[in-house]
Image 1 (cartoon, each protein chain N blue to C red):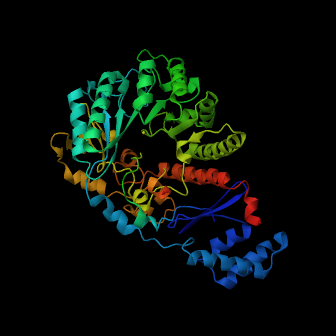
Image 2: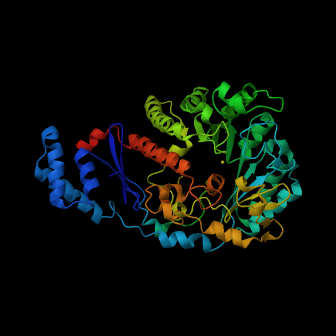
Length: 464
Length: 32
């Protein structure tokens, strides 16, 4: 299977199952797109008649191009066969070792964002704070169930995790003891709204956190529409100075500034540029996933606007990269030469199997987005996973598990997508969140265009 | 043709599971 598309002056061909990417000229673009549906003679006739006048090509030129395509096919770089279905079906069922936990250290928040999927941090329940004892037991549970995995991930999440900062610090110290004792490497991460991001927290994060996510929605008026405190006051003026101080002291360690865009700011590129102009360089801006009846929900009419914004974002990044003041965008970060293996690509995030969320009272859920939904409770950190049927259900989710994805060119990038998004959009974890699929495919096209602009200064090289 | 990781070859050299969980990337093995 191939996917071909044009981005500005580039003709791009992705070979889905080999992962190969080709930059081609107009003649090759047409030859490749006709290759599987027409005979060689028909391809020559059609391409020759299309380009003889404008490009001065001969029939032999077209034949030579067809020969190049045949060579690439023989090398497995074009029209490569799909041989991954069995891997997808069996990979998650080989073992149920756990390598990542999301610790909900605080089911409470000092902001009151109306679009919060966690219902202002309480997850449709009561306010709660994780005790050190529960957190330490969760880390023990992770170590006990990690099997051969050396690298483990622990994310401090909420609510607002800094509402329980003392326990966060104690748990990191305990985790460091466990690392030495069991020869493991724990990557701690934390997500914060920035309200309590003072110098003590900043120094601690810079010492101990592999990654930190800073929540900001962009421009002041956009951020303060939703991200307000319990008195209804906007948070921008409080959190931006904190974030600036954090990043100044962060050095070259990882962070992300992450925002959410809604129907109210479909011009989200302006928010990304605002973040970049504030001096933040590691950026992410995500579409809100909410009930379609909500005024903030994205609509079908928004789609062309969003597509245009993603394309303009790619152009902006290419421009700024050339100027030496570039920034990264989470979804456009694709490592072409040393990217993920096929196992990672077919199996996705591992929610419900190797990744789980832990509530303040020690209950296990497939991921943070299922917390509070009792039918997705999987067990607890004392008895382990007792709802094995649910684990088996999540183990069956992959890039090949949905019939609708069989002919999708993007499935080895989305890995079957997000089970929580599918659930919230369709009521089933194995449903299809079509709106998200459309946005995802546009983002991948743009991401590849950005990467290709780094690889080659102009598509004219394809004509040399 | 842009240089990319050959997915079919990663059947043999992939699957170690040591990469970071991704939702809230580089593969160290592929760099070797």
